[in-house]
Length: 347
Image 1 (cartoon, rainbow, N blue to C red):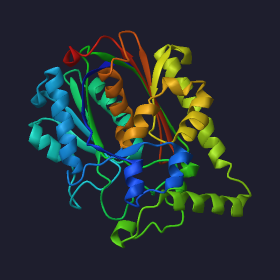
Image 2 (cartoon, rainbow, N blue to C red; image 1 turned 90 degrees about the horizontal axis):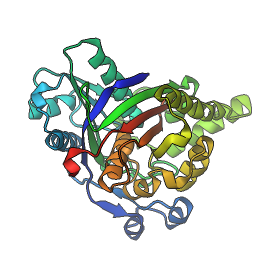
Image 3 (tube, rainbow, N blue to C red; image 1 turned 60 degrees about the vertical axis):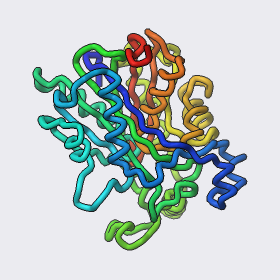
């Protein structure tokens, strides 16, 4: 979807202190062998700070940085991957109440770690639909420090970190322009993230741990037994260059014009050999070196990395940033952002 009439006006991030993989090994949380295998550095750990509180802090920073008023917000989209608070309650209204965004429509997005891409598409469409709508607040937040999930062992090639991010989108020009957002789903792969478990009752209600590695193994074993192959993965990986190619074409650039790519915070072999290789990009143009230090922070990976690139001065006017994510569904998503000028809050 072409979105060149939509701009980024503000960014906010809440990133707690990290626990290194060496510290995790010393505490018996992370296998020593995994350090050499995946070259991950650590995970951000929020302790007892709830995900909605982190989301609120990130949103407050976004408003403070750009000087916009929360009460002028037309839409709040809250993306998350893990439990946010009491059952039957939704976190976007906590953010809305504490910010004073009384006129905004608040919606929770449950799209896993690709939630911010869905939020970008929905927000752009919502703002365009009515001329009077001007501003959307997008937040993502997760705290994985709970029972029923082990941040250090729940999946192959990543550890889970806690964080929150916020993006203020608007029709008025900001420091960056959202040129295009694209997504595609491979629905035949939806079982990857649930294989081996019953749909009902939900695992969290019967005390069953979330184990993506076990579910992936179950899916592959079942596919081999039924069809003699795991060809569905070929379709998933074919979707990656298709989505990115469409995204770049809509943005009016080529892969050679991409200054940096902000991607999922996974292990080096996954990012470099599975994704960057098929896009023709070197590891040095990715955000992997930063992402490996904070862990896979749910739907916040790409926006927190974008904020990092801006803060350390690695992006300037005219640069293009490619955001890419692969999430449950399986869903491949991509967005192109053009930096127009240095954000005002950076001086």
